[in-house]
Length: 118
Image (cartoon, rainbow, N blue to C red; front, side, top):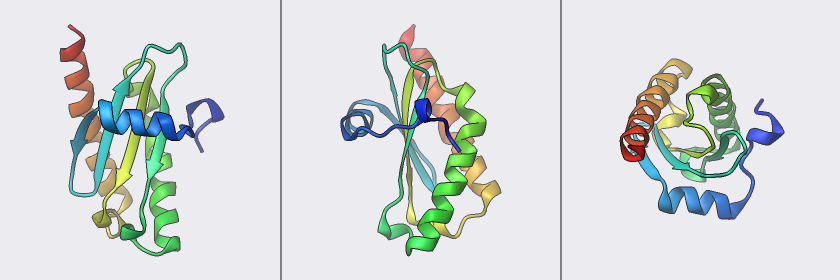
């Protein structure tokens, strides 16, 4: 489980990260990263729509994504807001495949944010 400080709950923050942040996608996920100037650590929010599947499937995907994210929180560049959006293919993907896709997309986002900050 993510700590309370790392959970993104504000719809404004979700919208800002999706609209103004950088985006990287894979077959199963789309990640939106917005680096902020706030003093807080990284915050993460999840979007798993009904297109992914019924409630049981959506909750399984969310649990997997929360666990993957918790393990990778240190990779976020400082005070960042990350929105993880699951695509319908995430429903049939295993934990390992979601992990590889997450790492690939996050790696691209972090590399882009480092280049942009120079």
